[in-house]
Length: 349
Ligand code: HPA
Ligand code: ZN
Image (cartoon, rainbow, N blue to C red; front, side):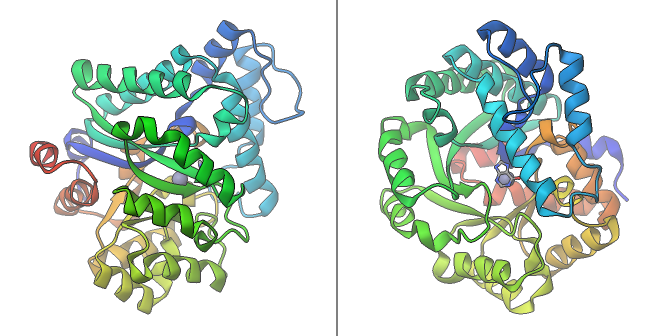
């Protein structure tokens, strides 16, 4: 198998990470102190009075790998993820959040990244677009200049909210379109297929944005989720698929993904909440061996025991027995399926 040094040293592109999911507990505590906001881990949970209490609360709710196999535990993830948004209010908070990610990224040799953000989780609390976007923009500029990490943003819609809200946010974001390379779809998938958001995605496509969607993130072994993957890929409704691991169980889907030449962003650590190492390794191997362009990513490192892209690549290598050559292929896949300009791509790897 490939050695650790190669996995660390290889220049990386990260394509599936939620900026709000990188809010480490240390930073959350700092921002909460700075803004004088009340700190809870989940809505209506007890108020937390110290960083130790915050750490202990997180430990107590986060299931160990392989254990988050029911809806209740999955709901706890979303509750704590969205409660974390409460710490973010001012431009400086968004700057610090993004910069904290960029510093981690630089330390793992990430050279380019596409970052998801969930504007609805901020506007709904009364945060003005300018606080959020100006903070992100300044961090993005400093990361490029100081850390040599380039980036672009993917604006996600929360699929549990209405298509009308998605459209409103789409229009409101247009003044910032120079920062935004693509449009995504995230949050809880239950009964919220991508087809509900057809209009806003069609508009975004016409306006020149790339499209991606979370599929099958919850690892439900139901046909419905497989159909979601198919519906996203069919007709090239999406330029990439986020997760979509269930495709490994369905040869017709593998064929479709290959035919449409759609890349996939996988986040191995996330799946350990619902599956075993052995099963996960087999599924990733199946997709990889079929020739699908998949990349390895971190998703929500602050909610996943601080597993960043490096740890996810090490995990993938371990469970799939990837060689040096495979690691290079994975890193190149990420460059290829990224939406960076050709001139940026050429300088990465
Ligand atoms: N799943 C779906 N949506 C999300 C996630 C996730 O793990 N993290 C942030 N948004
Ligand atoms: Zn995700």
